[in-house]
Image 1: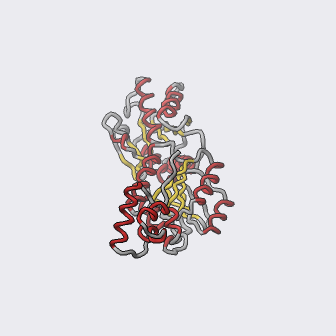
Image 2 (image 1 turned 90 degrees about the vertical axis):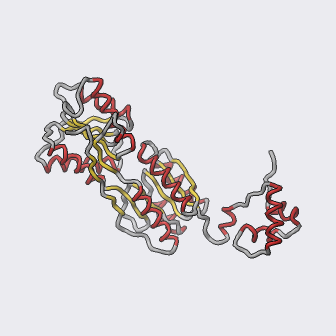
Image 3 (image 1 turned 180 degrees about the vertical axis):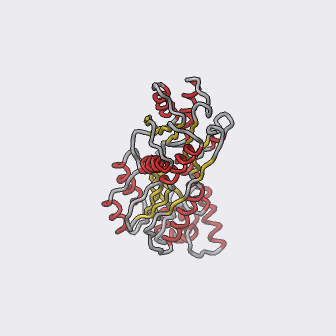
Length: 329
């Protein structure tokens, strides 16, 4: 295995001190002549400075860790991708650490802290109070996306899932539907529980109760199977509200298999407003779950915390919007 080129190698080739190499790539002052010699030697050797070690000198690494447990949906994948782009646009670097369960989320967060990150953003999943307290002592700001935990050491950015579920139910009731069902995923996560609670509340507002409920694995196939279960019953729902758009697209496919017309026989509403929802072949009515706004809030708050601002106790809540398309009347 080839040895990694070091600053010492560059210094020897350029005929300068190691400190001069460090100043050239850091914030120190060097003469134009010396800078040219160091850069020429670096180019010849293929040297790249250790940016993490260099930034530690100033107390900041410019690293923002993304601990991602919510990477099983198109919406969260889009959010993570755009967040990485925005982190880079603001002159920072993203350290992405996937986590497969709540237990590994704590481990992943502590692993991120080992890199001396300036902030940690957790997308999906739950963080234990023990880890929160440990990070507070380390002075590392931690942000939760699509979660709300009342803790002074956390800042939370979330869509109003309760309000979104209520929007969907009220709209279906206004459209005259009377057998309204909910398609969900098996795990009653923070967002799932809030959307379901809001949906039930919206039905009660209209003097109705839930007609039926089915769950399936999150995604197109899960939505397809859950909808097939509902469409195979003796009495069919006349409207479906789905946990997210991917499940709603699966429900549209199930309706086609069962020769049901959408929206004449059954209306379907999704959640998130992913790009596919607007494709003419689907034309899905959905609840718009913003991405750009939470990213803006996250990045602004990370910058503010880096400047010494205290964590905000109240969650940053983004209101959803109903987007009416062709799968409802």
